[in-house]
Amino acid sequence: MKPGYYFWSGDIAVAEGAIFAGCRFYAGYPITPSSEIAERMALRLPQVGGKFIEMEDEIGSIAAIIGASWAGQKAMTATSGPGISLMNENIGLAVMMEVPIVVVNAMRGAPSTGLPTLVSQGDFMQAKWGSHGSYEIISYYPESVQETFDLILDAFNSAERYRVPVIFLLDAMLAHMYEKIYVPPEDSVERVERKRPTKPPGEQLIYEADEDLIPPMPRIGDGYKIHASGLTHNEKGYPELTPQAQERLVRRLNEKIRKHQEKIWKVEEYRTEDADVIVVAMGSNARAVRTAVDAARDEGIKAGLLRPITIWPFPYKYIEKYSADYIVAEINYGQIYHVVREYADNKVELLPKMGGELHTPQEILHALRRYKK
Image (tube, rainbow, N blue to C red; front, side, top):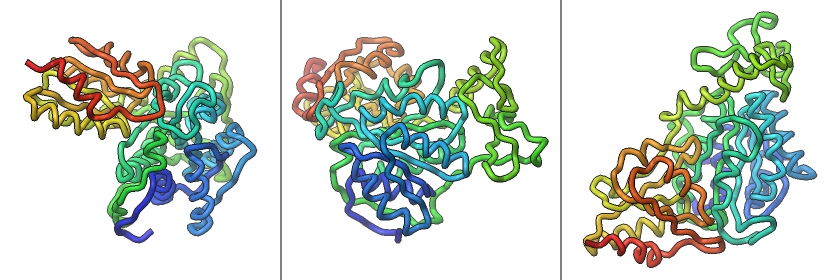
């Protein structure tokens, strides 16, 4: 892709951004509102020496990208809420085997089939807790087509750096919205490559972690003895079904993310420095909030916007740092609201929408006017 300006939808930006990041394998199954990602990857991957496979379902899709990652490829799939529900067992497998993959979830109205073509933000908790057990995962959520292109590179870099699945959240509005974006020169960005073993085959334990708690990842076919399992395992990868092995392994799987969380966090703070009330909003919804905050300031209301771009691990220190009241505007019946309540010292109010459309600036401004002095 030549540097310059383009007019893309969010879905196209995901596909082009993934290729820009080095993704060369995609397996997926079409589902609204993410289908255009698969369509674009089907067109573009063969042009850059990559592979595209349309699988029989979402379970096969994520299994395929796990295998491709073990073979050394940067790999991605994309789906929506019902597909993520099917993928969650293998997301847990990827966490346990420490496989770097990127899974895009273009959120739509839910539960169940819900509103297939309309916007929602109902999958925040699913991104964190969709699989069973104790684990940490990384999840990003952009607000514009430009940020979608830029942030998918961060998603791949984090997956490779920390050997972890990354859930990349979109919403139906952003997936299908077209905007002008800029593609930078190829050599102007960092592309993280996973850490490779430094010891020769026979001497390298495949889950022997360094001080950063992240083990090097051998590639299938390079001569290393690889035993990858969803069972609790030791540093050789062999099952070790003891409380001691479980404690050692699961603690490391969590701590390798928590130890680096402040490097992972991305947050926008807009007019928050002196705010009496701060609106927490994510993704497309934050655009309306920013307009409402400006209007509130014009009326003498000290309002601000706090936008978590990294959803998980949640950037809780940005909530703790302010003494303001909070309004959490999300297109669901309260998910991030509960997280904000956990860390905020003052009042936290939920401003929900069930799904189908964004909050309007007028709705946000109406809520902010209660704080007019």
